Image (cartoon, rainbow, N blue to C red; front, side, top):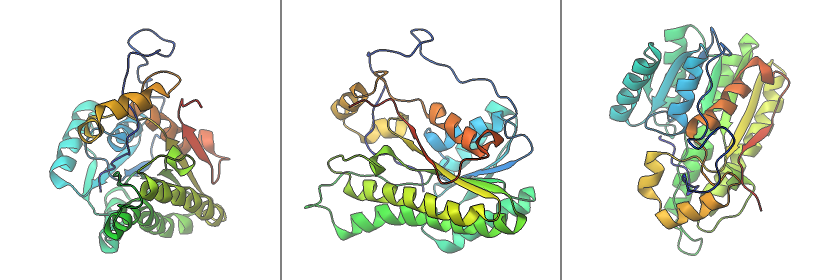
Length: 278
């Protein structure tokens, strides 16, 4: 399931971070994930998932990507191959279907020999006030965003824990902490992802497996721009200290950090990737 972040922001004419008017640029790779196999769910398109897959490949990882949208998944795989020189393993998977989740993990293990890092990026957004929200809207968002993360985590841990190593990084959201109108279902799901991260981390640590999460605020990409009101995006961007949304690769950098040995002592943490101010 392709990640659809809730309304979070876009580049504005506000202040830019240090480094020039053009803004920051992705850093060069340093082999942080050399020799490791990384699976990124909901990686098709232009969002955090695709950016994470690319940054992991640039850091030396063997990358597998999944999404339920086969056409977009194949296109993303081709783009990654062109950018990095290595074509990723692409697996079609709907995280709301348990048999597909298990088949995804099995296919990655069969193709690469093992699974070292799982990035749970699949999520579904939407806007609806509580009084107008249907049961179907509520359940759909939670099934993809929270229960889908649970299904993938369970499948990965069943492979990682017997091996005594592995890393899982979940994509949560600052809405797991903060309130926003029309986002009750998404915020509840992301708060659940945070709690799932902490609880699964305690269990996984016993076997030498680390589980952590990132919580982005504004991560602007083409898909989000298509489905979100321009005025709302601009208003939310103005809440950011830098006056702009994060680039997806800036969130991906933090995911790479959590997946790497530099985060070897982090267990059950949720790192905010945000420049929001009160």
